[in-house]
Length: 110
Length: 115
Image (cartoon, rainbow over all chains, first blue to last red):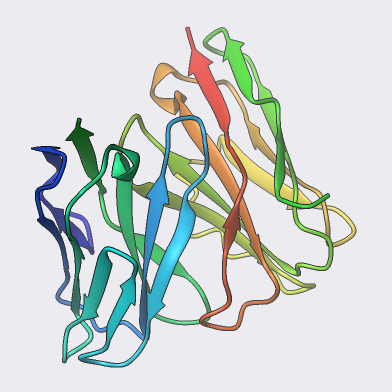
């Protein structure tokens, strides 16, 4: 059983559509990070959210941390083919020890 | 180097052989992590080094797995008597120190295939 559950596991959409990826846990995290990983490369940090209820925006990506700091969501507006990749959430419980979710594989078709 | 460097990038080995995977962290980073990733899946924590402290080995799946970090820099992950289920991408990451919130930088990984 994963400590962090991501959903959906797979998502295939058309260019221009919106989507939301969820990251849920029963544990409280001091911070939560979102990563994007492309084939053959390591994960790259997109954002870190720290405060319960925090919302951060990165161009067309909106990240939200739940009030109780147990869950998070990533919303992409008007998805582009360049958004294709594996999206990973990771919770930090203490001292930068990250626990990763199982990932959401996104494919955006032109 | 500018980023975390891992070698080899790809390794095919026969079942039962030992393998060594190397990680060069970003210069000055005292914290170093090893993770394992099965195809298209999330990351499984293996081991964590922070400065001169005893490493956190709580994620190592069996006693066939070991890792060391010499001189507080380069790290080697060793898998003895490899099994087919060891096939995965082994990712190394480093960060400035173990303080929560510091950005963690990943290498490109070492893809291990056990045949």
